[in-house]
Image (cartoon, rainbow, N blue to C red; front, side, top):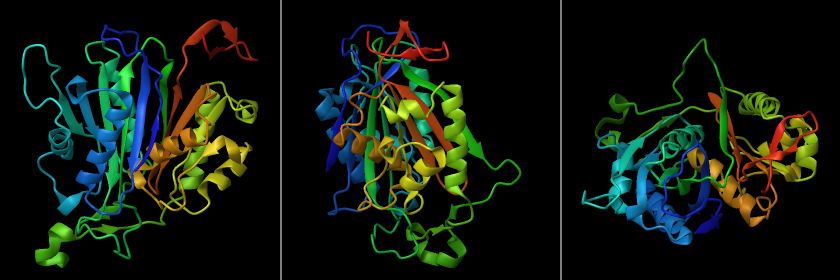
Length: 331
């Protein structure tokens, strides 16, 4: 079990408004004694809550971004099954936080979209903590399926309303607009009685590197960042692992130091939907989160790419960037 914890939020129980959200804790699970996404995500979720000192009954929202799940289960929502395993909001009683859960499935970019959705809830002030879960597995629960390109892992991010964080910025996306193609499907006719354990995944038909470069460049322009911010450690990019050497190749294309881009441990492989959390945990272990004022969450696959800037520190009205735009810093 690999974990990373970051206490960027104020953990008081008061109402916080203003649209700011902080990452409180993050965890990933790569245990090899199980290939169940339900179990891997549950273990990551429990560790995430434990290291933050947050109990399950404090969680008001659970979002599942994992796509490939045990036995191709479609109903009920996987988020509801994970909510039950984590014992979050199982009983509605006076004084307890009611919990809501749902699946947000958008391929590899699900976590990035889930963070935006979570902030939409926490920014209202009535919900203090939201838990985002991700990860994938082959529906047969086998780890040795030759044509399945993704690693079986689980991941969790705990976020909270906070007045002591800059929060998440706008979402930048890149996707083909003219055609929509299927990247994965279950051919039930071909699978016959084994349909619950079969899935076909098609890769190699897109260019995730080019799409990622485009969305990151758009993000840098929109957030008023340039290569100097990466050179001094003020900004980092959390990169997924859709193709070998992705982190280094993206750094070259962007013209930034490779040390400013945190990737996924090659030993993990491609954790698909959980990749942004793996990269965040890895960045924490390397100490890259300690001084970063902007953390760019990037996710990509053959069909699309998306990125989101996260600022763990509040906006200081006394600090400005070189071009006169405000910049987030310690206050």
